[in-house]
Image 1 (cartoon, rainbow, N blue to C red):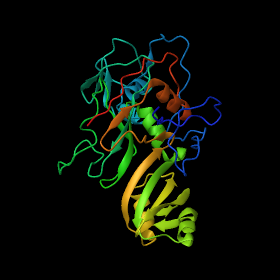
Image 2 (image 1 turned 90 degrees about the vertical axis):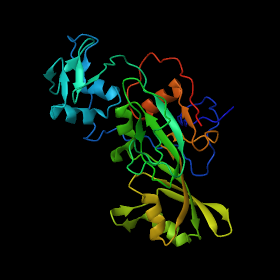
Image 3 (image 1 turned 135 degrees about the horizontal axis):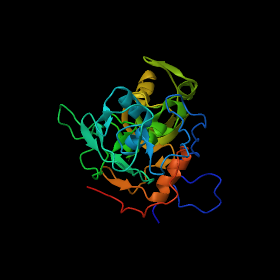
Amino acid sequence: MPSSPIRPPKKSRAKPASPIRRPLAPEPVKPRVQKPSTVPEISAEPENDAPASQKLQKVLAGSGLGSRRDMETWIEAGRVSVNGTVATLGRRVSPGDRILVDNRPVKLNLEDELPRVLIYHKREGEIVSRDDPQARTTVFEELPRVRNGKWIAIGRLDFNTEGLLIFTTSGDLANRLMHPSFEVEREYSVRIMGELSQEQMRSMTAGIQLDDGPAHFERIAEQGGESSNRWYQVIIKEGRNREVRRMFEAMGMMVSRLIRVRFGMVNLPPRVKRGQMLELESQQVAAILKWTDLPVPEMLPQNRPQDKKR
């Protein structure tokens, strides 16, 4: 049986599918219950509203255009209209309403359904961007088509880094996993030329100063190696640009290979090779929603066929 990319909750007594066994893969820390100010609370719906009526920003976020906070900003900027009238915050929409964003129509999705979540094993030499002036290969080129929405990348990896990328059609889920206030763990395998001393490793967990502020690893451990190449496993809760590489460079070590193997509760399964992708099943998506304190629809759809490309 292949290992599951989803780490089961710690309190479960059922025997789970074997997760990826890595020395530094502890049970992931659940995001704090207190929500950051940039993620607005979902207010209770008035009882006298029609059941199919929903807030405009929720519908737009559910279409994969961005987070709910992003949609509120778009509405305030006058970029959204409903039935020919510029929308305002608090506007509710129902089936049959015509929504335009920047004068382009958006199809309503008022049903409570699970977002789609896809994991992809990024290769070196690919960029996490839809457009590139240098015409380099982007990770979006061969993703499955999404009707009435788009894939949103959760976190980024630089051009020379490989490993786990997560894509979703939910702006709220993407925002919840990436927002610094939730401190979601990222785990990497790092190969360097040379070997760190114990003192250097202690410094990297205690904290060192980078150009853009202090940084530290939650954990770092040796993973062996051959000749002058040594492997280390690190866990960090930030996603600043090239942060892992820069921390090793601050110790005088050059990173020759960097692989992300975990993001939050999602692991990169060994069977998903470089350049391949795998769409998560409905129960796995529901587990991620629960872990991030997002609502889970009562009726789960049938599992979609898993995509594996190239």
